[in-house]
Image (cartoon, rainbow, N blue to C red; front, side, top):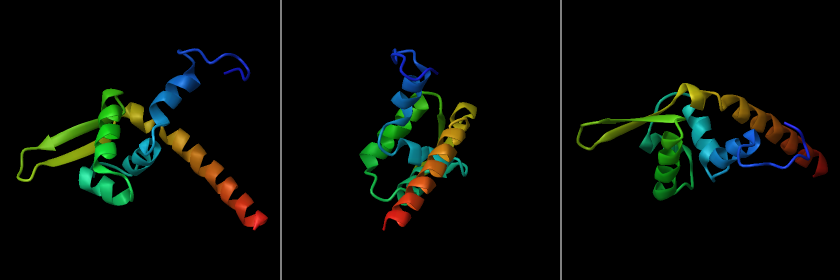
Length: 112
């Protein structure tokens, strides 16, 4: 990665950002880092996410190979989501974001 070089469509940063930049996406991954979750557990943990957006983000993460979806034929249907090995690789990004968030929070505390 060379700063200042044009970010072409195959740029690794752009490829990552295209997947992770959607609203709620990184928070969904953060929740799944703790293990398999049902749809209802994700919705409960992510206060404010609409069912439509949560379903769309999960479908996108599944289509990108970061999440697997397992549906159990029960009444009502039970659906579980799990990070794939590729999805677990995003943990480094989420940890870096948490560290950066801590710096931002500390700076805000100093400023107030």
